[in-house]
Length: 328
Image 1 (cartoon, helix red, strand yellow):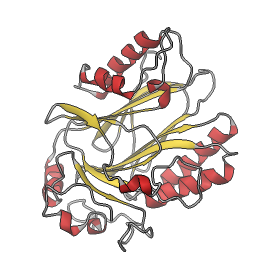
Image 2 (tube, helix red, strand yellow):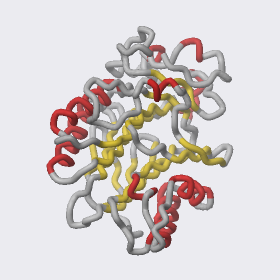
Image 3 (cartoon, helix red, strand yellow):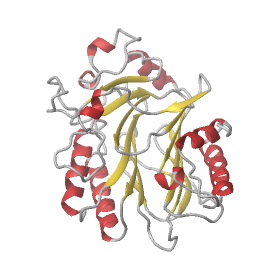
Image 4 (spheres, rainbow, N blue to C red):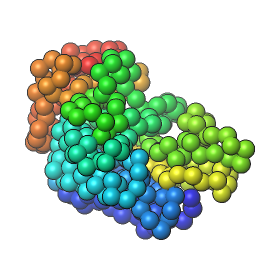
């Protein structure tokens, strides 16, 4: 990789941005700043790492997707086209059920027996809630700014693995992917990455692994996404030298400082558990859904909160701050 940067870009309402080419750029979303560093193995061509971001029509919902396709050429182009289309179709929808189902089913039809891992995140700026779905992808690193501690962004309900909801994209038709809601506090950071980073090798043939990446993050500056991202890149370059063997992508996200609207939104919502996780649910219609209706539209009320938020978060969690993740 390189530490060079391109001009920052601010996403406008209804905009979808991304791709699979070499890039180093800061991107401003709704109350979230992203720093993207992506380098294909063959820098003159697009790689198998795909990154896309969007902001909804109301400047309230930001979505970020990072996918790693097991192949190159036409199969990657198909995945890119599918991601762009689904990002636009679901740009105003915080719930990710239809997005994940459409991504899996469409890719399965055109994947030529390939598959992809993906992490999909949707952030609502007024509630501070982050919804994420993981399709076989490496878990993001999560910096809790208030506690000044590092951890992982992942659901901790064992039943998810039993239902196969974390399978990569394009393996089994009709797979329903679970989604977890977490409280992203002001100045929190998330680090998304592909296995080209954690499986990087040095001259001795030793792999990096994700625990080492976490150790590096704990030693890096946290004042901005770019500062953290650049520090991780320098450690990666020092570790592997010229021994690159895969596409490499890092995306660092940071929620902006608290605002009046965000404070009101957080007060109106339930308190998270000690790990910031609020709830986990399967896509509507699955055995774990318990009859909850899907959130298939976004309707802002006076404060910019979804009128149908009660359908996303179970009512019994609103008054039990110590309760952990719950599969509905």
